[in-house]
Image (cartoon, rainbow, N blue to C red):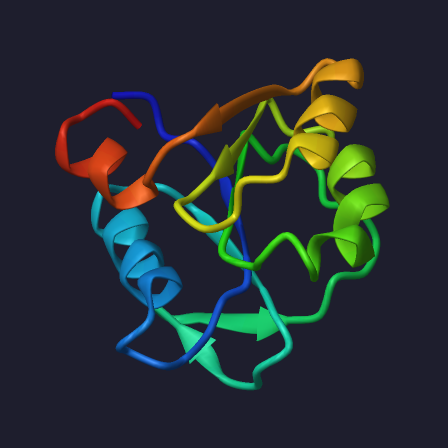
Length: 121
């Protein structure tokens, strides 16, 4: 399986959240992660940082923020230029999906945890 550098938007140090579980499972599967979020701390050994300048070499962005918060990240996501944008359950957003596709970013509505557990990541 190819290793895919993954940006997690909505990272949290709260172990009851899916973003936390995804970070650990991504790292366990050998993927490099970058944690973006508003909470302070670290997840899976990687510090949570605020969104800043777009990061290079991001293969996938996986969303763990709701559609109401996503407009704050539209430009950041598009300028990061990932190969794909994963809309986890509850994050579906037709406007962002259309913008991403127009920018040449593949979009998928799927659960990162399921993709990892079924070797489809």
